[in-house]
Image: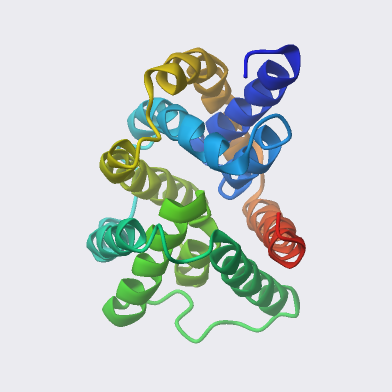
Length: 248
């Protein structure tokens, strides 16, 4: 796990993680599939979690004043429930099933946005009931395969948050989720000394990519930014559906 192929795939995956922590949501979900070109998906997920956590620190500093506190207060406790459920069922629920469900949710929601259907709660305060549900789903799918973005987007995109607040809320929320995930990942043996050593090296390109993500958030027009988010959501969700169908 230390050849040229691994390090090329690892650096690209780490850069994608960094861009996502700079405020480009969904992009980080491509990291595990990219690294899976060189190692198994399970090993890739375990290796990349410390990279997510390391780059989270930069994103937290950048967006420390730009976030929606109500959204975070609703989603964070619910995500902990989802992570706990993922930990309890890790040995019995097929990852392929979870991947397919995540893909189906993301595709359906992205297509609904493209055809112009405006969600009923658009530009209204975040509601607790749907937030608890989607927060738990996000925590669960994030634990299983770092695939929490689609269910998270289903809840947050319709709220009509300003672009920077949306990026900051996303960065802070997933920083919290990743920190919580460290405990069960360690308990399941995914944070070995070898993994941590390689993760430390891959954290460098991830951290270096965070400012690029922040810059892109700043220069992209709001309409284009959310259009790109939706396209990315659709692309990643289709990838999940394909993986589930093919057993990848």
